[in-house]
Length: 417
Image (cartoon, rainbow, N blue to C red; front, side, top):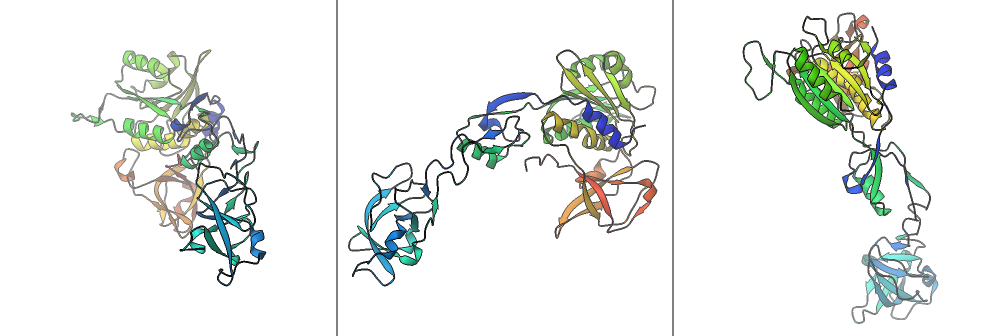
């Protein structure tokens, strides 16, 4: 039987390369670049003012001033007003100033912008302004052409997840479309005679299909597109038909029917549909019966995951195996586990590594993990406050508060970082 690391490697070894598509920039939040963003022109394209104020030459700071200037001030004639979107009509001459607005191009010979609140405007004649010589500092409040980025510079690399600030920067470069990875489609099928849709009152011996909305949410937070196939009874004809439908997606996730019971029909039906088994069973708790295989045609590959029916098992198997596959399908860097400090004592038993639901919180710069009390892999309600798993080894036995453990946060589609 595979270890978790061996099983994960087997999964990732079968993930095909991301499929690219060109989309409008406005539709790109959360998508992953498959083509680097290269700066096509200097940014900014022209030198501009960073504040509302007066464009001046610092050479005038050594001027003789005027008898009308207050002590420590230099009187300058205001010859023009420059607003954003307009260019100066001429260059700046000695002992002149131009009123300028934030973002407007600075005139030739300007070497400084003095904020408007630092100057004194002649109330009797607005054509003059007194500027403190202490504020006449070279390059102050001026953003030089090319100061942000130079032509040919690589701004964003392949594999970058697009978030609002990055999208805004791309737009500033005049790029209206981006090449990104296609979002993977994920078919989700629940199996079992005992299941009913979540909006239906269960009859005797029946339970609601809680795994399907949970898995759909996990797919969406991992960047995929869920395709819900509903429920298949433990019937070879119905199951076979649903499997054919599910194999059209990039990833096919089935829950239930992968253990060793008389109605665990999924592996057999997948084999009949042409899916090649890669592994069946992993040394972990919960989730030991997980099944993984690959379906290939000349034009299509589908990764197939048979997850145990108990919802906490499905939750764990998705986080450990399905999510990393979805990340690689999108061209994202492989997920790496983190570490946290246990805040409470915890004991594990059995012969397999346990993925213990925990509440992860940052406290004074340290990630703390508080174990959640849960009874078994069917106890989904006990995990509602949890936001991750901590891996605990059975041979360790008792984990004391303060020990460091490996953790897997569930919100790792915070990929846009």
